[in-house]
Image (tube, rainbow, N blue to C red; front, side):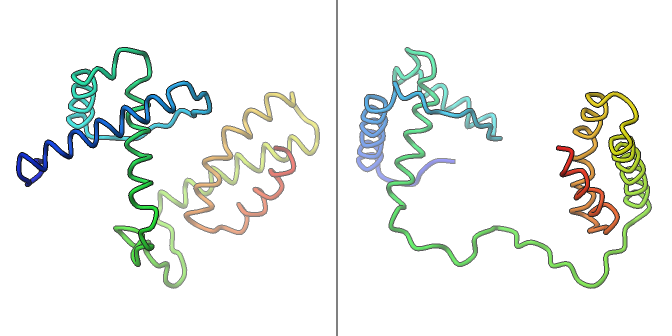
Length: 169
């Protein structure tokens, strides 16, 4: 995808972008309050960005590509700070749940398995049967699945068991 603009404007855009990145690198390269984030991007764009950063000399020190990305994000934030909120905030609006949820056979089976596992673990914890560390690890393993199944089905039994499990976490 190429920008459709004259060479003169394109050169101005490039020099402006380079100036923004250089300024941001100088100001923020030593800040240590960064957190690792993972984004899924098209491989072609990542390779072109990496190549461009290398061409501009931004890869002379470790982590400079991250700071360049951060600088671009900051420029985007600054340039859109006064933009009013959009009316539609998502590309695909969430599906509206209508009527009663009727699970398919796979969801029914998964609900039964989650209920059984969660009930067994909670029962063992309440009656102090088994090693607590082992039961805690089993509870941590089953909770994400139970929360997902509850989110999909809104099953009242799973809700009650999740409320009980909250006390053990």
